[in-house]
Amino acid sequence: MDEATIAYYDKHAVTVSDKYEKVNMTFIQRKLLCYLPEKGNILEIGSGSGRDAAFLVSEGFDLTIVDPSIGMLKRAAELHPELAAKMHCVSLPFPQDNPLLKEKFSAVLLIASIMHIQDQDLFESAYQIKEVLTDSGILAISSSVGRKEINHNRDLLGRLYIERPVAQIQLLFERLGFRLITILHNQDVQQREMQWFTIIMEKIGEHISRSLDEIETIISKDRKDTTYKMALLRALCHIAQRESNRVNWLPTGDVSVPLR
Image 1 (cartoon, rainbow, N blue to C red):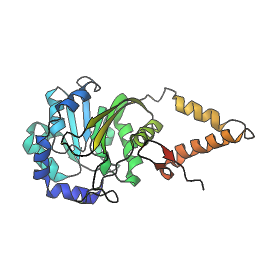
Image 2 (tube, rainbow, N blue to C red):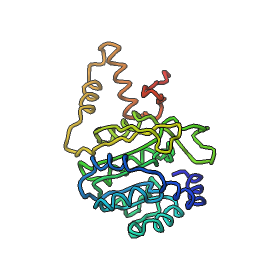
Image 3 (cartoon, rainbow, N blue to C red):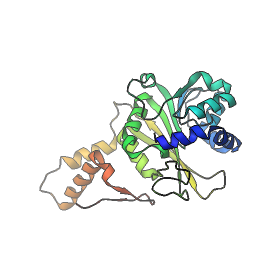
Image 4 (tube, rainbow, N blue to C red):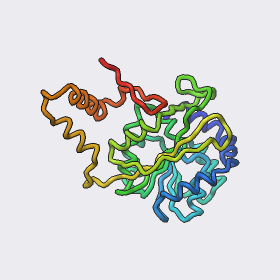
């Protein structure tokens, strides 16, 4: 995760945490409960003040929380002592020797944290999330769209905010073996001029054939002397499989492909 962003949260942990704690997230938290495995063990990455983790603990879930900011974790332990025993100060993607990579969780949450992951770390982070989830495990990712005063993916305080279109995140995890359950949309609860989406996905077992893979196989193995349409589809499949970082994701959800 971005070092400048971590440094900001370390320095302003008390102020930021206290602000988070005042935000009424009841409606969104209750929505999330509809999709989580009953009484499951959950990994929350980017736990912040511990607000959402504490709510889930009160609902009977077993929480493990991760945050790259030691300052935020210390404040979370002060505000929610019940979380202190299962805190990990580590950045995503996790180091390869991190013990969390050997555990399995029934759900993984990234609430307002994927925006802080740099592009070069996104795929490895997603792959690690897949590896720590059980088959049929639930993934919930929330992100903002339309955040004001962002310049070169930085806000006025220097924090990294990469507001990726929901379609980009969906495709990334579908390529890794997830299926979409639903996408939730809501206005910013602090009345700021931005919106939020929460994408809920399920990890598919390795033994299940995915329709997307079957379609790509048919297209890729079709006769090479067929029409230009098939050639174009083969090229797009190649891009999706191997070079998805080359496309431009548009706010509308559309994708533009550089023709070079």
